[in-house]
Amino acid sequence: MKARVSYELTEHLLVFMMFFLCSVYCVLYVSECVTFALLQLSRQFEECRREKDSMVLRYAQAEKKNLELEQRCERLEQQLMKQGRERDVAVTRWQAVKAENSHATQCLEARVCTTKFRPMTA
Figure 1 (cartoon, helix red, strand yellow):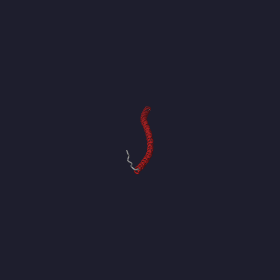
Figure 2 (cartoon, helix red, strand yellow):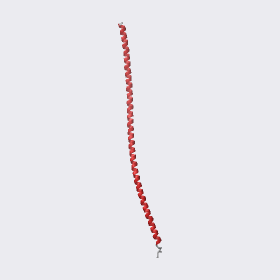
Figure 3 (tube, one colour):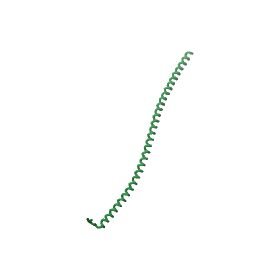
Figure 4 (cartoon, one colour):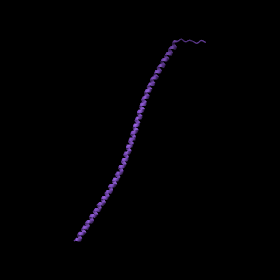
């Protein structure tokens, strides 16, 4: 009976050891799977972080360019307004000169018409 109990204990012990080893292998396999998944997630995270940094950089560059273009547009609008004022001044001067020329022409015509024609004597 002792041999039988010993045989049963040995059999149970072997089954328990096999179960334990299978459990250890399962844990190791799960650990490897988790490690692999964590490695993949870490790579994906780094890739996403680099992409985010790249997008932030592109956004900052676009904003800088946008501000430069707005400043350029404001300067051009100011130049346009200044040139418009200068044009108005030039048109006003031109009209004044034209009116003065017209008045002078009228005065000359009035003098020519009122003076008598004298032929030159030789």
